[in-house]
Image (cartoon, rainbow, N blue to C red; front, side, top):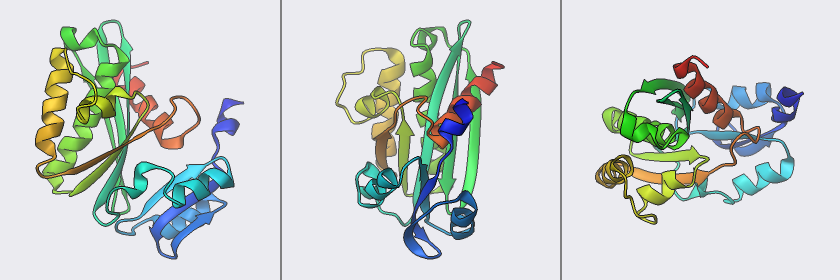
Length: 201
């Protein structure tokens, strides 16, 4: 079934108790990451993908590992309302967010509005907690493009989002990683579930 396809078989760990390595079970990985400051870890269905991740094949290596929070965000839309879901990892802790919004102008953007708000939610959290660097994993490319000024923001919601990201960069190092939506990525799928949970769907 879909759940078995989504199961991760290899876990890449950066800065764990045993340094940087790959584990073939979650139990082995968990023992090396829980409670460890600055650790980054991610599950993959193949060994090759895990090795690419460790070799710097994603933007995970573009930000300093010390003091880096890693977040996954997603959005959902239902009957004129939208929501965001997010999961953030920092210093061995996992924080989850599930929020619903009722803004007619932004709701016209459907799921995208929620994903943008998910990014803003984790950005605000990092600013409040004094976290120095944040890497946001997202499936809609506009989350990064608007934040980095690569796409022109021409709606009130995207204009406000781009401005908030510019201001956040005064205190927070921001990085973005695009992931494929509904592809079995454990934490992207969790963010999706949290977004739907906020809308009761």
